[in-house]
Amino acid sequence: MAERIEMPKMSDTMTEGVIVSWLKEIGDTVKSGDIIAEVETDKATMELEAYQDGVLLYRGVEAGGRIPVGALLAILGKSGEDISALINKKNPDTQTIAKKEPTNEKNIAPEVTVVNPTVEVSVIQPENDSRVKASPLAKAIAKDKGIDLAQISGSGDGGRIIKRDLENVDISKPKTSNTTTAPKVISGIGETYEDVPTSQMRRTIARRLAESKFTAPHFYLTIEILMDEAIRTREALNQSSSVKISFNDMVVKAVASALRRHPKVNASWFGDYIRFYHHIHVGVAVAVEDGLLVPVIRFTDTKGLSQIAEETRSYAQKAKNKQLQPTDWEGNTFTISNLGMFGIDQFTAIINPPDACILAVGAITQQPVVKNGELAVGNVMKVTLSCDHRVVDGALGAAFLQTLKENLENPVRMLL
Image 1 (spheres, rainbow, N blue to C red):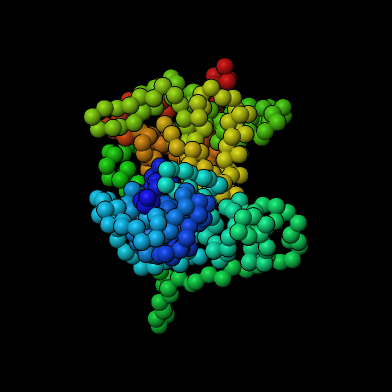
Image 2 (image 1 turned 90 degrees about the horizontal axis):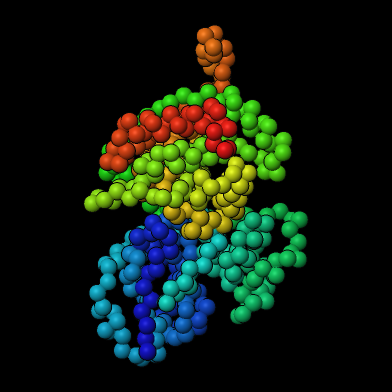
C-alpha cells in the first residue's frame, strides 16, 4: 500500500524546507535506509532517509522548490499503484524558487537523527562530496580532517562510507580544496557588488527577531557593576577548579540566582496568559558561521560554577564541530548575549522568543570610581536588560538588575 512522505519538522523553528537535490528518480526502487533527497532547513542541510521499502511514485516539489512542514514531499508504493487519493489529500501549498547551489551555504550541521513514522533525517555537510554515499558521522570526520570522500572505498551497506573507513586514511597531505559555485557578482565602472542567497538559518533568524522586535514592546535598562570582587573570586576559584571559570560563567550563575529571587522575570507572553516558569533554563548565545545558536544550561540555579563552566565549554566545542543537537538549543526561559570578549562596552539585544528578557553583557573596563569617598580605579562592566513590557515592568526589571549587581559585586551571595 502506498504511503505519503510529508516534510518533517527538523527543528523547533522550522516552517519550511528547500529541496537541494533529489537522489532518487520517479520509478526508482527505494529500500529502508536509502537517502532519497537533501533538504535545507533553517539550521542545516539534511538527508532524508526512507523509512520503508517501495518504489518512488511521486515527488511533491522538484530541486530548488520550497515546501512547508507537513506538505506532501513524496509517495512510496508499488509500481503502477493508484496514488491519486494520496496526492489530492489536503496539504499546505508548495512554491518553486530559483535553484540554489548548496555549496554556497555555510550551514550549522549538528549530528542529529530525527525519526517520524515516514522518514529518518540525518545531518550532512553541504560540501561537494555530499552526494557520495557516506554516513553523516563519516562526512563530518572527512570535512574536519580534509579527506576527499570521493577517493574512499566504503565498507558499509551498498558501498556506503562509514567511520571505520576513515580511521587509517593518510591525512598528512594537504586538504582537498572544495569547488564551489561563485555567487552572482555584478560589476560596473568603479562599482561592484555581490548577491549571496540567504540561507534558511539566516532567514529564520531574520523572521524570528523581526517578529520579536516589532511584536514585543521592548524597553531597556542599563546598570554598571563593579567587578573587582568578581575578579578576585574568579582567580581564587580557578586555582582549585578542574575547569577554567570565565566571567561569563559567573554572569550565568548570577542571573540564575537573581531569577530565583525575581521569578516574574522568568516568564513568557502567550497572549491570553503569561507563563511563569518554576524551572530556570538560561540560554547562552553562541556565534556560528551563519548566525547564532542559543544552547541552554538547564536548571541553571541548581548548578555550581564548575558545572556551568563545563557545560558552556562543551556547547562551544559542539558548536565549533557542528554537533549541536536540537535538544541543546530548546527550552530557554532567559537568554544572555555577551560581546565583552570583542571589546564592546555596551549594547542592546533583541529578545529571544519566547523569553520575556535578554541580558546584553559588555566588556570589563577600568574606569574611575568612588570607593569609601575617594576616587580610585575600578573594573566596571555594563549590562543592559531588554524587557518585554507586556510581561516585565520597569520596576521589576530594575529590581532584577539590582539583585544581579549585588550577586556579582559580592559573589559569595550566589555561592551560598
